[in-house]
Image (cartoon, rainbow, N blue to C red; front, side):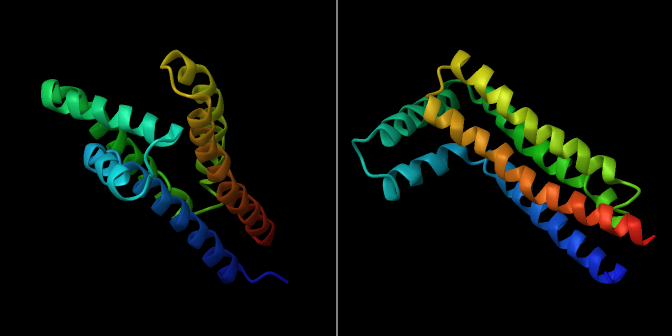
Amino acid sequence: MINKAKQLIKIRRWILFFVFALIISGLTAFPIETELKHLLECCIPEGNILSNWLSKMYQGIKSMNANYPELAYGFDWLAFAHIVIGLAFIGPYRDPVKNIWIIDWAILACIGVIPLALIAGPIRSIPFWWILIDCSFGVFGIFPLLRVRYLIKQLEKLN
């Protein structure tokens, strides 16, 4: 027999994990130039396809920040959006059964990452291997959400 209190704790832990990952992912958009610089200096060996592409991205971001800093405002909004989306999970955290629709919505958003990356990536000249990395956010994001949905459905049966 499943204990309702233990089930709620499991649900809340998975939700907190997902929200934490979402917010951390978003916060990385603020210092993108500094992050790319440090990544290239200490973590990525030179002379391979990854370092060449990240170096190109770094030069572009650096040039943009120097010449058109207002364009970086888009990165600020990206980070803010991650935080706001994370706030939406307060509902399922407080009352999972009543707010399961937010979990369903988030699952759909994870699924939507894949066509967005596959369509917009080539339009923006993103290498296919990087498009797959972007797709992985949707793929890996969906697993904790599916687990939460399953746990909520079990909790719903207990009520």
